[in-house]
Every structure is written in structure tokens, then in C-alpha cells.
Length: 256
Ligand SMILES: O=C[C@H](O)COP(=O)(O)O
Image (cartoon, rainbow, N blue to C red):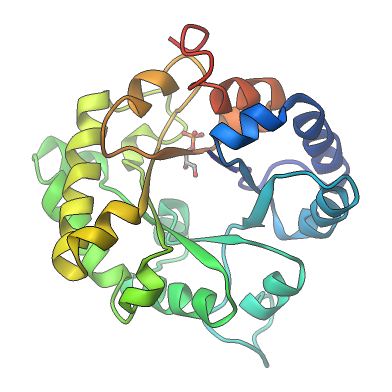
């Protein structure tokens, strides 16, 4: 379960949030479910200090990185900088970056390759907008994004990649895709990974669903065979809600 904080929570709020997560999540919770937070860049050092200092079994990462590794790129953050801060993950190709920063599949692929150059695991985001969904082209559209975003990613790298299927119409809208909607596309993504790499590799890759996931709907979505986890925006800002989401396996009745 990965919490994408987007541009929310300053570093003081980040400390309070991670402390609450660390206090609430038990060893049993974390043995059953990997938990990661993806704060804004300005929070990462604070999160690192807490996770290391309190020996929390929580992963963390960033929401973006540069395609370049170093140099005259004002405002950019490199994979090397994120690796130095102990990041495990980095989100690439979130729909908000595709839309607001005109990131193409080629850029997303370059960012995923930059992540691997520095030992980071990319969480590659794909998903269709409302018009594509209404036209019934969600699978075709999303698989084209997979092809483009994973171009240049070797099988050895793809073994660890995380894919997040996020239908844009379900992000921050309260409009969650049905479990069957999520399964249709997540299953197709796994099928495409099998074609691009191998069925064995496809089985290992974690495919997440994202879009208005909450404690009240996560168990139903997670019951689908090709949904391995969730990329959670708004609900991850509330530590109690995020903990309830992470506990869906142990307490499915609470999350139904
Ligand atoms: O990265 C997270 C997604 O954009 C989902 O956001 P949301 O849970 O606020 O809908």
C-alpha cells in the first residue's frame, strides 16, 4: 500500500504523520502488507530520519525524478539524490504529471530508466481519462502506455517494477472504479507484461490500483486476482485511514 501525498503535508506534518503510522502499524500488519509513503521532496529527509531513528519497517520514496543524473537542470531532483536519502521507490508518469507537465510515454520511460540507474524502484503510472473510458478503449489505451513507458526497461529491471493503474476519472473524485473495472485493466496489464517479458516475470510484478481508494472499498478491490495493492492519494493523508487500509487483510470486515 503506497501513500502518494502529492503536494500536501509540510515536513513538520510529515513527521507527525509518519510517527502516527509507526506507532499504529504492528509487526503483524507490516508482515502482511508492505507500506510505503511518497512525500513531497522537502519532507524526505525528515521521513528518513524518523524511519532510520525509530527503525520503522516503512518504505518511502519520491513522486518524480529527473531524466538526467546531474548538472544544469534548475529545479530538478536526480535519482542519485533520492538514493542518497534512502528512497526505495519513485513514482513516474503520474497522470497529474502527464497532464500538467506534458510528460509523454518517452519521458516516463526515461525517468524509469533513470530510477534504475540509481537502484530505485519506479512505480509506473498508467490509466485512461473519462473520454477514453466512455469510448470503451481503456484497455487498448492503457496497454499502449505500458508499451511506451517500459520501452528500454530490461527484463532484469522489469522484475521489480511496480505498475499503478489509475483511471484518471477516479482520481480524487470519489468515483472509484468497480472491482471488475480494476481487474479488467490490471489483468490486461499483467498479460502485456507476459508478452513483453515472460509469464513468470508478469506473475512477480506488483500491479496496483489507484483512484479514490479508502478503507471502505479497499477490501473489495483487493479481492481481484490481478490487483496486488493500491496507490492511495487523499486517504493516505489521514494516518488512521491509511492504517485501516493497510489492515484490509487482517480485518476485512472493517474495510467492507
Ligand atoms: O496517486 C494516487 C492517485 O492519484 C489516487 O488519488 P486519490 O486516492 O486521492 O484518488
